[in-house]
Image (cartoon, helix red, strand yellow):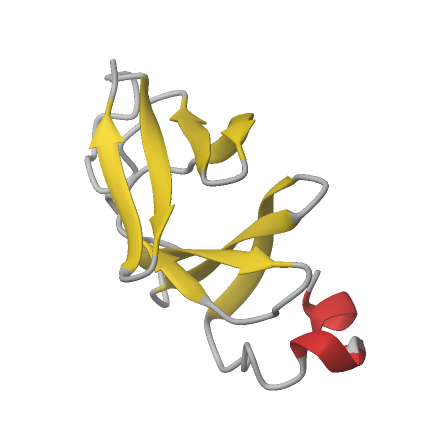
Length: 120
């Protein structure tokens, strides 16, 4: 993913890869992609993670405000302005990896950014 983004002129300078950071794919739809940008500490512990919506027609990072400690994937595209992200619910910030809280987040694209709502 890092190489594809760095080689594609439409995505040039959207992401910079520095020590400890990685870029990953969280879902691809016909009109957009959801990308995660993750930072781990020197012990491979999750330090931060951000999610971005990038429209194929107008490549620009728009942050999706979700909890950084969960790994989300695109579940469903509802319409041109709404989509659902889901997680299996494993909180990477907790020491006990057996605890899980699966949930879904409805994302709505607005002129001010992306609004999120936990739906289950």
